[in-house]
Length: 151
Ligand code: SF4
Image 1 (spheres, protein in one colour):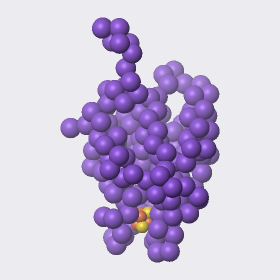
Image 2 (cartoon, helix red, strand yellow):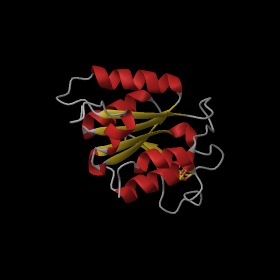
Image 3 (cartoon, helix red, strand yellow):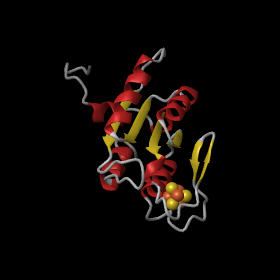
């Protein structure tokens, strides 16, 4: 609540969180399944610096921008359990979560049920096309949300 008694919108609340206290969660199904050279590790999908798709792949573009802005972390997860563990470890104050509707609903619920002194602000963006492989996201919209309040 602000001094003018207006409740902040989710986007305003997210914009008020310093970028160094935010994380970005992405689903690994956004990778190009045919020729992605990334490797799944305990911390999610890792993108090689020299990946030839880095400038065009949604994951590469969003990861690079989050890192450039100074985000606390980026997790490209194959499932909600890994994303939740990442959130517990990083304890962010703001989360931008991109996933299919089902994963978003389950993920938001899981984070809200996790005991924490201060609940993070969660901003969600559903995939344009889901289906578990070669999915799509509105990258421009994701970049806009990623940059909210960042300079
Ligand atoms: S940038 Fe895209 S194609 Fe390259 S490793 Fe990452 S997910 Fe795979």
